[in-house]
Figure 1 (cartoon, rainbow, N blue to C red):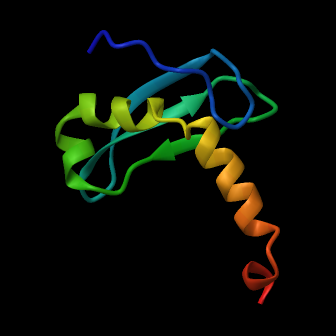
Figure 2 (cartoon, rainbow, N blue to C red):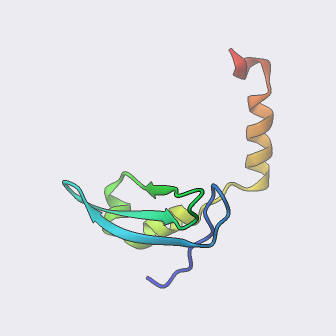
Length: 82
């Protein structure tokens, strides 16, 4: 697995690592190395846990600008507040 990880989506830190764990079943998790953030993320599905490259692809996914704008607009509608 040599694919480069994108920065932490929560704080932007480039100090991101991934490791394997095992609590009742093997899993892969990502950890932000920024002490002030410390986010830990794992994807709860067997595909990501069996194929680490799939988990890396999911970690590296970011919404497009259109999705960000659409999401903000949708949350500001009267219907979304009900």
